[in-house]
Amino acid sequence: MPVVPPAPARTLVRAQLANSVGDGVFLVTSALYFTGPVGLSPGQVGLGLTLGWAVGVLVGVPAGQLADRWGARRTAVLLAAGTGASVAAFLAVGRPTTFVLVACLYAACQTGLAAARQAALAHLVEPARRTEVRARLQAVANGGLALGAALGGLALAAQTAAAYRLVLGLDVVAFGVAAALLARLPQAGPTAGPVVAGPRLAVLRDRPYALLTALNAVMMLYLPLLSLVLPLWVARRTAAPAWLAAAVLALNTVAVLLWQVRVARGVTDPDGAVRALRRAGLLMVGACAVLATSSAATGPWLAAAVLLVGAAAQVAAEMAHGAGAWQLSFDLAPDGRHGQYQGFFGTGVPLARMLGPVLLTTLVVDGGPAGWLAFGALYAAAAWAMGPTTRWAQRSRAATAEPACAAGRAVPVP
Image 1 (cartoon, rainbow, N blue to C red):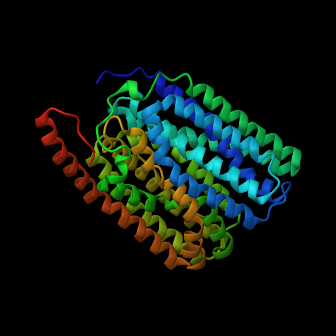
Image 2 (tube, one colour):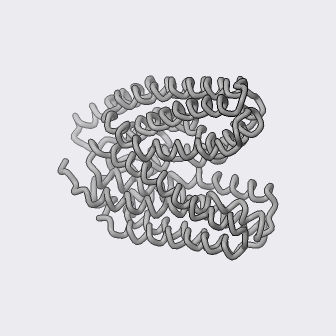
Image 3 (cartoon, rainbow, N blue to C red):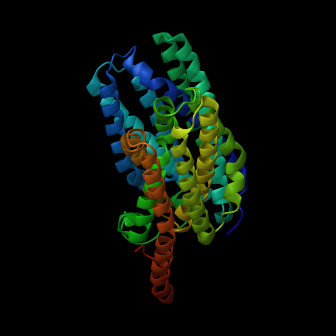
């Protein structure tokens, strides 16, 4: 396969930066904007966002299928613009029903955009560099989130409706910039590679890949740990100062910025991916064990030190998990179907956003140290199971490819 010039990768990174700045603004300010100037109750906001991410789970595969058929570039541009439009619509909501509808549009566009962007990456970047480029996107995403959060913090400091609307307007602009950057990509889709024969939504019949996706969704449950669970744990269960939760989030952001690409460079094939995922499982068990002991630490500084050690192990697990999961998601998807396969694999993110907060606050904040250990065991079990499931997927593809190659025809997806 010819080496694609690095320009598409740079364009994807720049678009991701703009996208992430907008996300950072939204994450920091949206809850207080909706419960303040808009006048919704916390329960209404929670219900609306939960329903929205439920729609996001359903949209991933159809959006990926659209990227395969219509072109990843055009699909990504459309969905980036749609995300910006949905944020603009949030500025006009005033009733719970309208909020729910806009939240569903927002989550659908966000989930679909992620699938289309992954499909564009798969089409435009040679296989040997896909995981490295995906790691760059993740590193830039963390930096963009931090910058967006800082901008959102200005609105939090002002605490006025005008300030909230101003920074959310910046979110709209950020997604407009992302759409303009994505429009500069080369064509990525049907004309960039063959369309594999077989059922239209073949990924839904691919049992090994479906199991990989489910296991990855379990591992993705860590997403609300730093933003929700750890702040509550620090405040309710430890002697550490409350601001330490912000320090842990900053540590995570800086670590991913500095080391995610380096971690990903060591993962270049399915075997390396499985090793990285098993390493992630062990690291998460260690992180959860350390975090569990923080409640017993006497004195604020000792508790803070224990929490920082646990957070360091957690971010190491996060980076190893990312590298391994990305490699498998690309390697085990057939050419011509990267959109729908990436869309399906990416459903772990909206699932974690929808289910993770309730599950982990109940398990960890209410359950105490035993809850941390239970989550670590669950994560490690999913990580270990990735190995046998990957081998099953490889056997399935080999068994399907042999008769197809002998017959000289396209390979259908199992």
